Image (cartoon, one colour):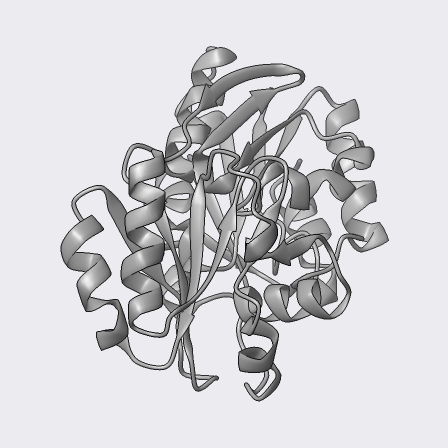
Length: 271
């Protein structure tokens, strides 16, 4: 039995979309019929990945590793503290950083984030995901409507790295500031991820749940928030549309998400 971990935006689907190519769905169904297990492994929170659950995945590594399930069984659940959340928002907002906070049951963004994004050029998968989510109303509500739910991640956008300096000074001991490649666009974007977890931890938890060997784990990703997954699995695959830095360390590179890359990689790997 193989355990297969698949990122969503830029890997399973085009960035910001919820419908995978039919070739990818067929490949996933075929490998599951062979007895292999396929897990979503994503930075998305549970609310934003729910549209994909109808395709019959075997579990979820959500919120970048903060929430991990096999079937209906929860293996790991680790939101940040209220104090950490408040400090992050206070220090980031003080320097004009645009924020979205993510809980299991929803996401809330600064009210002027859409104005910030509309003038940005086409960019990486994270920029495109938020542009799409805002323009198509995929559930990101106003920060004014935040209901106090436990928060797993803060997504950030700004124009200069120095806008993050105060937040880093206060929070970098507990949180990684994962910043995406910026060569194709004029703003920085990334996320604060709790150092208590990452996608690699999610892979290890599910691997141990099934008493599987490292060699029986395969991971597919495209951006730098997939780094720990790519480093942890026995066989790692980066999409051709992915970050150059990730391509350099992945075992294999497959065609882009819109060129049936996932299906072709499954076939090449005998999945």
